[in-house]
Amino acid sequence: MSFKALVVRDAPQRASVESVRRDDLPEHGNVLVKVDWSSINFKDALAVTGKGKIIRSDLPFVPGIDLAGEIVESSDPAFPEGSTVLSTGWGVGEVTWGGYARYQRMKSDWLVPVPQGLSTREAMIVGTAGFTAMLSLQAIQEYGLPPGAGPVLVTGATGGVGSFSVMLLAAAGYEVVAVTGKAEAAAYLKELGATDIHPRSTFESGAKRALDSGNWAGCVDSVGSAVLESVLSQTMTHGVVAACGLAGGHRLNTTVFPFILRGVRLIGIDSNTCPQAPRRRAWEGLRDLAQSIDFERIAHDVMLEDVPLACDQLMNGGIQGRYIVDLRDAG
Ligand SMILES: NC(=O)c1ccc[n+]([C@@H]2O[C@H](COP(=O)([O-])OP(=O)(O)OC[C@H]3O[C@@H](n4cnc5c(N)ncnc54)[C@H](OP(=O)(O)O)[C@@H]3O)[C@@H](O)[C@H]2O)c1
Image (cartoon, rainbow, N blue to C red; front, side):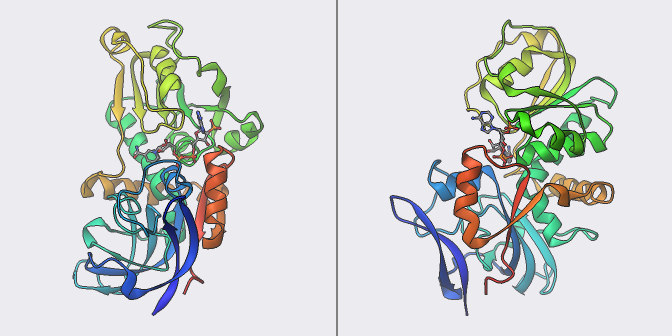
């Protein structure tokens, strides 16, 4: 059996669609998944363009941190043949071959059944980005920030994590203020549920003072660095900030004052290693919200051959929403 996969080969790194045989797939894993859909996340763009050291395995390598499809072979009775599953994280697409292939061998420990009521396509519109946004929303709720406490910022708002965070927070009743580098995206962000838009530039120079006016009850931050530093200095007493990204850089230069004088909670979000119980709870929450939110409005379809170009665009900050990869004709 042969099928298509996007394969990254030796330096200078290049990724192209190749015909792969089933015997080429890594041997680890007790389940064979026929992949219908994958998606493009920030990590995928780093892996495919070679701009970040995401691939931690020998080349050739198949990237793609997300996948959803049908099980066609399984030795795990909990994941029988014919069931639909999704996978995000666990180092798939970083350490082990990922979702940019029509078939992939997986460990059943990495899989989540696609919740009833959600299609494999919708699961990949969500993907790692939407799952991370859901974990961020749940952290904000669990750390005691109710809707009505005040405006909640979303930084990197037009990105995958950002777009989903705007939609999920608004659907949960929060007043959402979007922070974006794209002035032209205001209408898009308002349609997703933002009540106000702030330019990214007003946050990019970092905190003006250790404690600035407390304007924000909370934040989902996918940018990091100076933007997160500004956000922390402007967060209200007992506010909650969920830090999940580094699109603007990984360094954080701050003081303890927001934490010890305002009780601000800075919560780290790691979707990659999220344990199974909260993972399934988040996916059930996403399935429930899919009844009231139209995920399709942020989705753009691409074929496997289009992934390298889409990754270049994502690296240049030029895309909006979620790019999902259609593998149904890939073999
Ligand atoms: N912790 C986790 O488990 C987890 C999971 C998924 C993603 N992430 C991280 O979250 C971040 C966003 O991921 P994503 O998949 O949503 O990526 P994405 O779709 O590329 O979105 C990133 C957004 O950040 C903003 N941005 C881009 N370049 C920037 C820069 N140089 N400085 C400041 N802002 C910039 C842009 O939004 P605007 O133009 O609207 O400002 C862009 O759309 C990444 O750092 C990713 O690694 C973490």
